[in-house]
Figure 1 (spheres, rainbow, N blue to C red):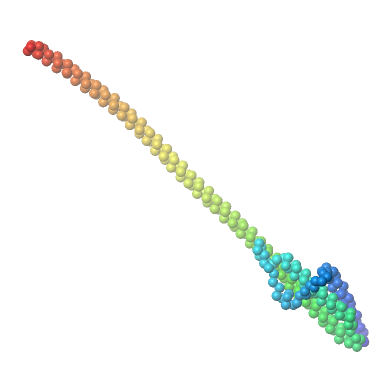
Figure 2 (cartoon, rainbow, N blue to C red; figure 1 turned 135 degrees about the vertical axis):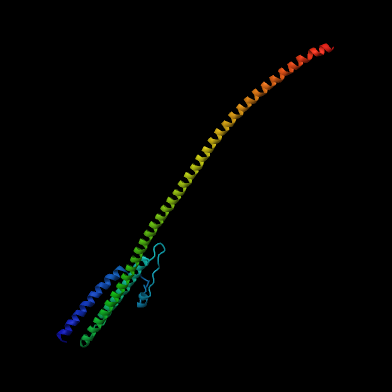
Length: 231
């Protein structure tokens, strides 16, 4: 085995130990429950994962996103741990160390790409949910402001209409008051005219009655002596 192969093998063993430590750290955060086997995710599970949209605010349910990320982390930790266990239990023979190192390096690179892809997808989902939430919040704020403006405008229009109707009623009341005063003045004039007419008629009839009484007395006075002479 030459120096280059020894260096590659040492680097491979260092990566195995690092992955082993990281895997156990992640597993400690997700301990297994005795008697309960937690299912591992498959690439199809990650690709076809669908999150429920919320009713109050459109977007992904953040609780479901967090749970999915925990499942991804748990699955990747198990893969790293199983990979590390296989490396410990089945060390590569000395004569095939170079090929084993290349295989391990390829596995590490593939696992790293899978982790990066999963993290990128999870981050994309979170960013998209946050963006949608921010957009919906801005839209809701704009709608609320627009509704408030419409309500204020409707109230102002209603108040203007009421003010116009009040002014019209006041004008009608003033016109009716003026008409009443005019009728009262006319009625007072008619009453005065009627009283004057009655006074004049009374005086006229009194004078005429006095004339009749005087004429009657004169007639009777002139006719009475003739009757006596004839008798």
